Image 1 (cartoon, rainbow, N blue to C red):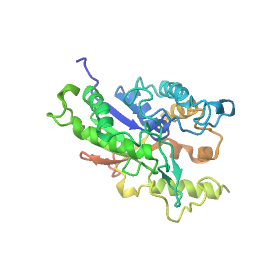
Image 2 (cartoon, rainbow, N blue to C red):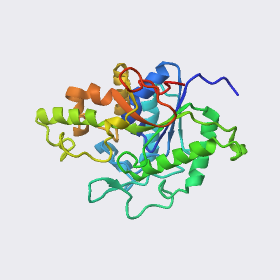
Image 3 (cartoon, rainbow, N blue to C red):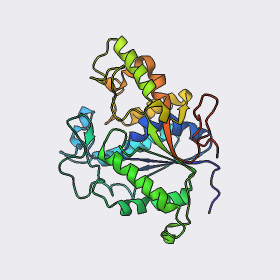
Length: 303
């Protein structure tokens, strides 16, 4: 086996663009510091909404070539972040984007009908067996994925959480599938988090600026959705504003999915640094090693 870098980070995401929105500055920081960063993307994002009019023909209800196009977008985004090891779970296109609907509460949910090749319908053990050999090859000390709710309920995010969690447990068992490599136990596992205090402060600034449409219906002082994480659950915050330009360029690379002048990015005008340059995490396996401010500022802290 060739010599591995001292620090190795594995991220498991559902679709191209999830990684950049949630972990862009984190990935760029660790690449710059010489760590090995490995990204696993579980689907090609075939069911995504196409925001570029001249590419609308790629949509799933037309030529259905969006997934192939998004392979290129992901590659360009990873070039911006410096990530050289990015792979699709089981190979490109093995698992199909499930798509989503909004339920009566306004949260993402499983569509009433899903394709047999959708990620949601994939056998959990079979999908985990596509990730186990990657874990055993890369031997990450840290893994990042979604919480049990998939952060906002998208079925592919939920499934990615389940596959990553199961695969991590299986990969650590010496007697499980020796043909998939030597056992490896990941020391620290984190779930993505959107810190409540940061979200409320951003909403306050938006409302004070006169914007009532971005995150419509959310009151800075009122109840927030299940995708918002109480601050007491946040164990690590990566503040890497020096890599914000790389993150923004990577988001631009996901052009069919993200428009930087849309309402989603209204936050960038006045407090983008706080929103996009700071990424929060919940530690769910391993021992936290907080700094003087009570949280970690390094996913590898204590290792």
